[in-house]
Image (tube, rainbow, N blue to C red; front, side, top):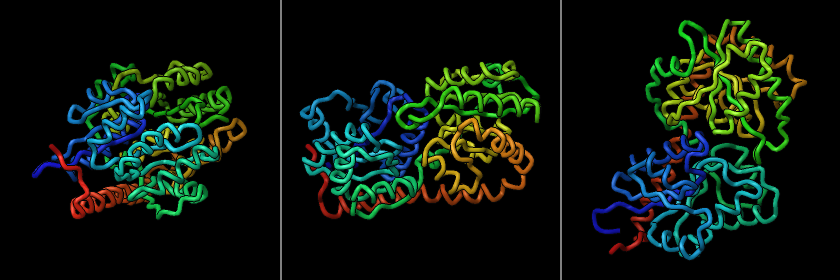
Length: 382
């Protein structure tokens, strides 16, 4: 680091435009770093560097998938600090891919911190061992939920683990003009319910696609008739579009369904949530966005991270999205609508508390940065 220059900080995560939730995490993380280190040079290890560079022109974006150890080492040699996360990236068969880069960094003596990372499920011996080994050498370990801390403890990690909150809670919404909804085919003067779906994938391998499609279709039909609503499916990944149409194919009131097709930033989708009267969904960041703007929401948990969010915010969450919960689920949707105003104040207070927990990660990072300077461990630039 040259006199008067900022640090060079690397950020490694599941970035590159594949998932709007991951992009929300990156946006929140970068905003935090810029506030703390306005003169820093930030290098983002991305799955799609072109997308990341276009979306965040003030950072440098480099690939990490399919890159050799030698080429990774060249980039890592320029860093003062590597940040791993945030988001749910440390799970079976996936953790080893990220931690391969981390190992190269640690071999060079590069300090590591995790930024509100998500962990689990983690049972594979290779992934578990790599997580225990690499995070054991981290300067600070922060995770976004209690379940992630428990998974790390069960993996044998002895380091102190700080539970904070998802970086998406650091975002501020951008305006989503009502004209955008008209362009998406949503008519004026109708109540609007947002719905979020997801594909099975590694994070939800036991998900019965046809079963949950039919269940969500029944929820959509119920709300169309119960509150005279239109149903807007909000894809958080491109494949969500296909599953949204799959749900609509089972709706008897499919003419009241719309799928959001535009290319929007996380901040714009956060702004979109203000237009919704109710939100029902599976994707974690869809639910986070609803909570942040005060839209009444009902989680449909498929993983522990969604249960954790519901518990933190004090909202009901029925177990799973299997067809046999149809009756209780429709009853819960009905109750949510009737009690939405009464629940709003308590939920808003919980959201404020979680937003403050998200800022804890900033304070942890600040301590690491100050330590780097104080101890003179930063890279000497040319």
